[in-house]
Length: 429
Image (cartoon, rainbow, N blue to C red; front, top):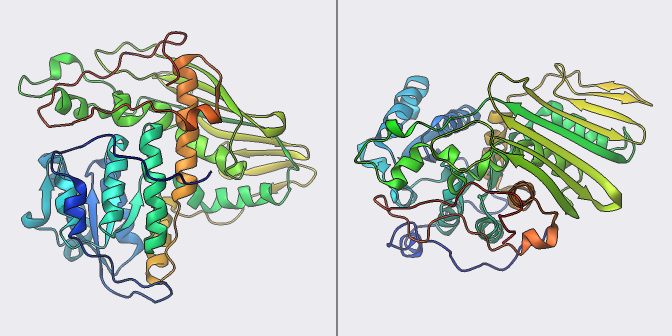
């Protein structure tokens, strides 16, 4: 997928522009090809469970790194996160009150605090503007998946990722399965022809709801629309991208991996919501079928419902055999040549950060920007096909102008997200 030219910003998170803040910030001292043995300073943007986990993984990955600053919209999140991390890492968590930032502009203050590496772990609706600002500020980046929630946002990250490459900034994605030793071994077997040519791919992501929508009775009178939606961010597409783009995109990413990140031809999908909720506009189940060249189909099915059978597996069939991942302790291949992963699997969440820090220290920063954006685009393509009930082509999705976020987001804003999508009524934009 080609990196397009940068597009004009489509939203202002605060009236104070990002460019003015970023322009005054220094670029990192890393030089291509030169080792970097400094004690690296980590900044965490987004202090929820995933962000706290990412900070812990980063600290485990590099013993010469410190957590230097944190940022979140909610003060209680920074407090909870710091208590947990200080207990685990003690003197390597050097965050004090002066480097604990809250509010919608907290990320700007963190980028100006002197950090070297930033971990982007907020709801993905904020990912494009945070990613752009981090690149402009010259920071190395861990970017949690997905890379945005709509096509305009992902294109912004694509363009910024190319700037990061030119500047020599490392960009590592939170699509963690690509750092799993067992999955890497299985996909290497597939790439080397162990199952022949791929003829079909079936992936499942059946699980419970990650964060169910709170009842309206839980909303405090002083909470604005924006605060209420942020406290329930999983349930609003402008913040999460919906369950297919936020969670099942892990399976979509493995499809992209198996097909060597080639563009699909089209996608047709179904989806909807069966569990009633007061508010929110996301589906709780999807079934998307991607058509790749030569009439090869990949099917990704997901569900977030209770009291149902759960499964997270991949069934990759080829002309010479079948690879099964997720059913049993290790990936297996059954066919002309049987194979099973028999090595020690790794902690893939730590491995992401290990490779990030190694690339920085070796003076050879890696950049996952292109493929992490491609996988996110695949997820958006599947969601769009389900929302509309239309067969969506890759060309259509790459031209999409559908922008899910409010244009001028303020903490006290009144904002009503789009209604629950209705296939046959909702249009491809």
